[in-house]
Image (cartoon, rainbow, N blue to C red; front, side, top):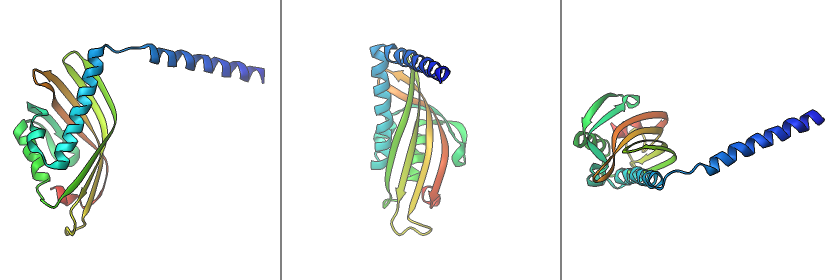
Length: 173
């Protein structure tokens, strides 16, 4: 019994050391600001999809973007920003489509004027009365690389990972 108390006390001490190192590690204010800007950029992208605001989406990417949507059947390749936005625009071309994109679990690392951002998402897509079903759900993750420019942070690389889909995926094709 005494050996268990010693092990438990050692475990508590180790946890306290780890937790204190987490709470005492401070990021420079510019990194904290960059992380906030990057997260807001990603949220603006979700809003651009849900409102079909392609002008807004166009402001969020560098002129050329390395893409990997092979998880969705689109080969990895560099794309001009306008072609990338055109791909999204085409997928959301149905005027009756209502979407809701929810983002979570952001992991953002800033290194000077470059950053990485990985986050999970759920894309809910609805088209009432569509042949084949009026709902499509896409659960996945984006892994982005970003560059800081004179006009703020921009996505320069985007990789899509799909965890799960349900429903009529044909509505986005």
